[in-house]
Length: 185
Image 1 (cartoon, rainbow, N blue to C red):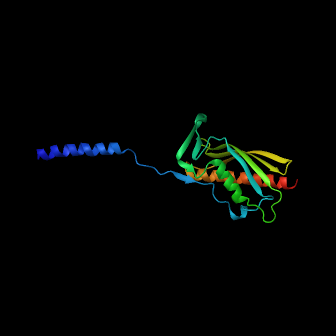
Image 2 (image 1 turned 90 degrees about the vertical axis):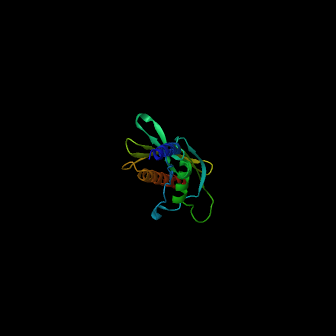
Image 3 (image 1 turned 90 degrees about the horizontal axis):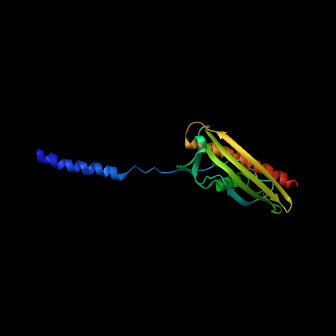
């Protein structure tokens, strides 16, 4: 009996040591998108859109950027965007505002600068701050600076991503209005 105990003790020590060496389990990151606009929201723009420079000055890349208390920002690498914010916004605008059918004469060159693309944890709010500029022809240019804040409930990343999608939809509507005003000039 005693030799059996002596034999089991080293095996137990080796077994527990193996658990320590294996480390924590791997967590698969979850990718989110800004969603697909509702069919009734998809309408051709007044003029064809040519995308120019979309700059991202928000500090957000693919990981969710979360503003904590005291203006501390952290990046959540387990909940992340499928693409960077500027590409997500560009794709959402293109999806929601396809080019009009017919002749492709005058077009709008659309540029954007994203200043904030983040989640405010204390206020449970998705924040998108963006500036658009559109240029049609050689002389016409309009600029619009916008900030959208959409609340979400709880701490679920799905709810936060849906709130940011609402912000992107509002931004696409602002682009639609900008292009409509440029088409009249």
